[in-house]
Length: 306
Image 1 (cartoon, rainbow, N blue to C red):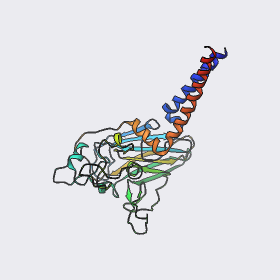
Image 2: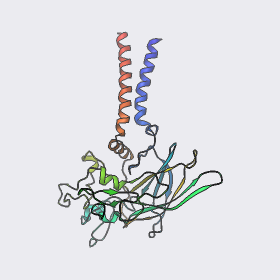
Image 3: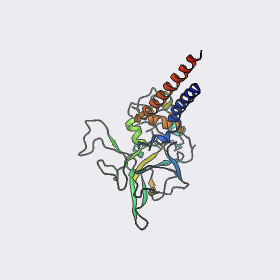
Image 4: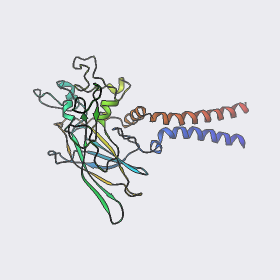
């Protein structure tokens, strides 16, 4: 009787450890870092649109996670429309990602993504059965380069902001009712480890002149997010309901003319996000503890009966 109970406890401990890894959503809300935790977020809406200028939405997918106090949103732009691939003159590289510009055009540069690119959302929040707070035209800048701007000093190191409310400037606040915000290009420039250096002559160790080689995520031990992602959180105005968030329009400086929609493995995205934010430690510690307890229990039972 006691033996079977110990066996069950050992097996349960091992199972709990594996669930700590498999059941990511049980770890709580996503970290707003500009990466998409695919297993945490729920699909909300797909925007199947043909962009026709700045007053149109961008094609892509909206995701949402409902927490206790905040709701979290992530909009992922379709990679056959635009992405985080850029280079000043490496046309062969750009064409691999579907940037099929004519050869006389310089290409999709870092400057196309910085300053002017943004996404605008309309947000409606039910405060009560008879009262709704409406926030129209909530703009999130994709990335601002703060280095060298008047009144902004970063000791000579280029610094960036994402999700603020004004183009080509830094130090702005985010628009209400946004709480936390980040973008995938902000992640890339601050957390990916990319320094602009590679053996090929097209790279000059300037990370703003060329995005990484396409095998960077497999060879560097770091992670570059190729997709354009806007991620943000909004407080819950009602304890049992998220605000309604819709994409109103987007400014994308240059979009692909044809090309192939190429995807990243969501698991790789999630694990890279965990490793960079320290959340991988939260997963591995319960797993290690559960495996240790379960193994010790099974070994004890085996020794008692041999």
